[in-house]
Image (cartoon, rainbow, N blue to C red; front, top):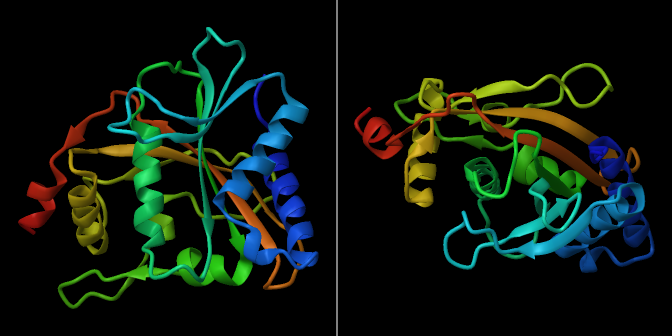
Length: 240
């Protein structure tokens, strides 16, 4: 039993699109995205869900937005982090926030097994998604051109409509020159060593209509690299 992440993207985007069309766009937030995702999972699987799960591998009082098990005493079958990207609410560095979610999902080793899926669910109004994340570029430094961040942290959409796509390796230690400053900053924010690489697969995407004001939801699956290693990115990239 697994979650059909493409169907979750369809169901979530359409349910939230209904809210938008009913004039309740301002009430849609991250909790709304988690709630409609949980509704779909409850209706389509037998998983026991645990929202706002305080996982022992996360420091302090950090929590995963959603965790699912086949039975209460069994390891997690999936972990999920969600982000609702919006244009208001002050200045936020969405690529940085999403990267931290990736690290949180990738770092977990307790209460999981090899088949546990680690899902990053990202939603928003299409124009906000484009402006705040999908089309964002980062400063490369050294006189180099700015770099689009999406293809360097997650698997971007490619041709074809069958999900999930084959996973790709996202290198950090051997990243392109234009991304060194980005990863240096993420290492400072994370406060610890970064993985040498991680694996990523686009598992679902749906846009409720062709309007730029419509709701769109993406789902990526994050996996730890086989024979995972870590390195001090502050030391490595801070000297380049």
